[in-house]
Image (tube, rainbow, N blue to C red; front, top):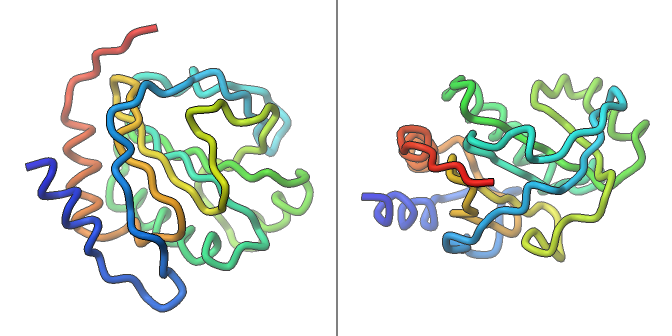
Length: 171
């Protein structure tokens, strides 16, 4: 079933501004929870604070049109799946003030962070946006470079399947 959902995700039609490279399954690579992030209010945290949840990590920028276009689809996914075990982590590699202004102006309702340390090697990325999905057991199960529609029924089914899977959390 999981492979059917993933295959359906690859074939999702996207509106004009959300064209992207083909989605790629990253395999079941162990996530690195040591990435240090800074909230817009100035609080330091690491991904470890979200261990045991399904994480949707997105590297984005305010100046990136495809990034901005897909943000509304992340918000729609959050609205469709309000489960507290689903955690969004939107990471911008920019200065705080432009990001904070963008979030206020767009009324973005998802958690936005800044990089306080370089991304660990497992998240090495060359382009924004890049998105990773980490399951409750701490494995990267999906990675996508480029913008994508995250509010489709196929993506919702995939995320719900991850939420329904028991966590086998290891530290």
